[in-house]
Image 1 (tube, helix red, strand yellow):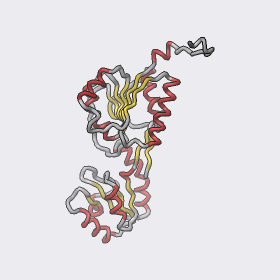
Image 2 (spheres, rainbow, N blue to C red):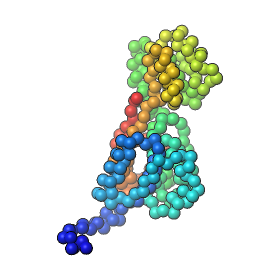
Image 3 (cartoon, rainbow, N blue to C red):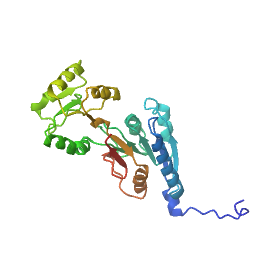
Image 4 (cartoon, rainbow, N blue to C red):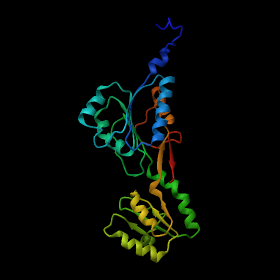
Length: 265
């Protein structure tokens, strides 16, 4: 039939056929439409140029994505790599990854909770923004305020202590813990008494709480609102490098500039 159409169908080069990879990609309902479009474009490009085979599970919920049936099905498929994107999904995939050891797992945490994660197994790599990187991102802004003698009123939780170089112990009265009972009333009193130039939110908080602080008519710098924008061409390039024989580095790894952009909101 192909010869009858007069069209030449190019054969896949044996070297490329050997390197043909199979991916399972799992993303959640919070993946923005522009990110979906970027991922689809990257997958299509790599499917055409690298003969990539992939299955993309969209709108997966972290609470139900990794049922025993799904874990068994994932283990039975001939995937080279399993890529899980999103904070909640990546964290919920850890148990599944520790059970399905015959595939390599790339877990892409796009959140900024900056907590400690324990990984076991040479087949799991997790990309995330670690606390030191987060501090380095915001350190110039804090120093700018300090050098200009502008007062900062800090809001955080007990799980996320403000770095001592930003809020020394002698300035403890400028730090409010939002997980303490009745904290907001005391916080309002402190803001009125201190008259700060800024309110800085260090720990992750919901948008309603941040908006409540804005009602105090003091500029709010929501550090915890910093976002991680995945760059899918860079992520696929990482996988291609592993397929081409570059070392696979398990454990917690930082994002490179080509794999993610950290954006202050």
